[in-house]
Image (tube, rainbow, N blue to C red; front, side, top):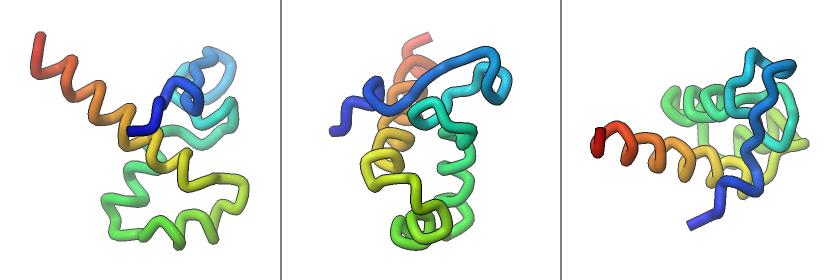
Length: 73
């Protein structure tokens, strides 16, 4: 599993503090929405050439980790 902490950043000045990919304006939630809409990895990478496959995997790992926190609480 990808260590998402290397890829996900939080900054109150960027997208209201939402988890973003490497300080960019694209959020984890944006990537998850693209995947949920049926976009494939290669389509996301083609549409956003500054992203990497690791960025997408980090978004999924972040979401999975957040879900664990919800289930435990």
